[in-house]
Amino acid sequence: MNLSYLIIIIFVLFIAIRRIYSGLNGRKFRASRIFSLPLIYAILLLFSLEGIYSNLDYTILVLVLIFPGILFGLRLGDNIEFFYRNNRLYYKRSQAIMAFWLASFIARIFLFLLYPLNILAGFIIDLILAFTLGLIIGESLTLYSRYREFLNSNRDLNGGQ
Image (tube, rainbow, N blue to C red; front, side, top):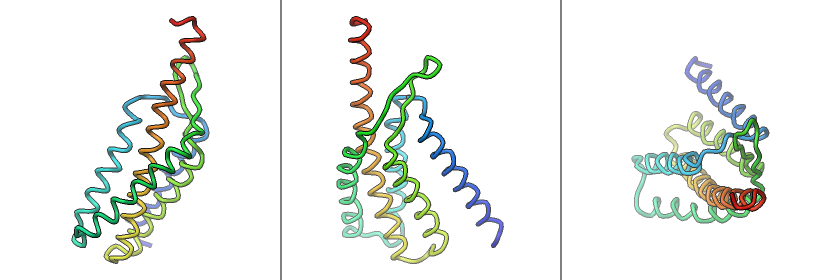
């Protein structure tokens, strides 16, 4: 195994461990994070679609997969939980979405490493990325909606303050 693969594997493990830790213990809530993650995934997908093998039919087929991802994200995102720790607002994401994101992240990395020039592997990577983008968009929409509900319920508990 060459050194560059080892570095990538260590990087993937680092990201996976961080994601699992924050998924189980919660993350500090920031509204910017809700919208930045889908934006990052959209940019990644656009760069991926700009590849040498892209054409209009390919692009449309990949982009259509975003919509089922959004529906699943809306449905699975229902398990979001808000809480306070040290007077800071935290949230826990849906465990199902976290598990899917982690599995798709690892699958994309390994497909890219094992088959870097394979058209089918590239297509599968793009499909996974598009579905994951939809999943994250759906979860973000649910997260923002739940955040607003959480604020309103806390305002009601504090007498409208």
